[in-house]
Image (cartoon, rainbow over all chains, first blue to last red; front, side):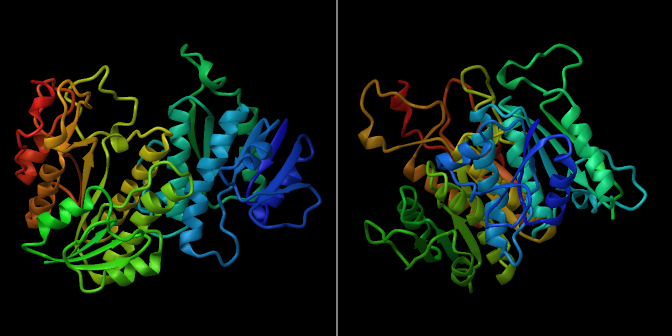
Length: 203
Length: 241
């Protein structure tokens, strides 16, 4: 499988690249240049054809939605919303089968301790990053899934080791493509175009 | 009341400014200079400028957001989504409790619930804008507002529109959307939104469809009439009579 991982400057993306490259072809991307042993493509995730080129031939995207070091709130919001939109629009146009969005379990931190919070519960973001930006990226990606143009798996990461996260990503990649783009089967048992999985523990 | 209007030099802005000016002090901003004389103070300001929006909101009692850029994949996000974040951050900074935001009808209904198939389409449905740029960017702005209202004592009224008409310019047999209002009638809703007791609103984040009474029953403006006391004019009926 050919996998594109965003937010290459973030430790988690780098660790996932190391892990996934054992069995897959991996390409990393970031909005600034990043030194890495893996294939790297600099991309501002704009709405020009370069984002299409970035996603062309890719089977799955792991969209990490992490800020650059020292990035201000406006830029973080821009990256989480506009850049996510551009990335997913290009992915849909290029026939990418699967998107894994790395979100945060902090979205559910507002529920009282001890509650058995499920993926179907309403997220409770704050008004600042990272919960607001992760929430907005979830909301944007949900609309692509709603329209059937992409299958999106949201992994809301809580307190979990890299190994646990890697296993969750492996499992998400191993799931059959949820929709076959716009020709998704509506038969009982067909995977949902939009799914959420909580990984690890709530803080 | 001191009222900041964002995007006030656009198409709807002058109508809203003329409607509000007799009873309010206006500070009108826009990324473009106005094409006509507007009442009150005018500032050139991009709604995507966080610091600028926060500064413009100083000493204001309410914010009305009319800013919109529909089609460009940079500016649509800048204005319709981040502009809402900036507006809400400004409201928090200055303790402004009353905000009126605007957008198109498909901010919540998307194109999935359509006037082709459905009737009695109400605004209180889970937003499902789809990936249409205009609908999605405005929906994400609405969501940012909703999140802020969960954490701060700020009430946001979202007025959604579809098709505006100048009654004097309507031509016989003219095509029209199933959700129409005259510019002047639309502007009257903003007076109601500034006057209403915020405690009379069902929640701190309320969506209203603002349009004239129309005979076909596709969309519903019942909530707007019931809660805001909106009185639709009969000035666009020539469209279907």
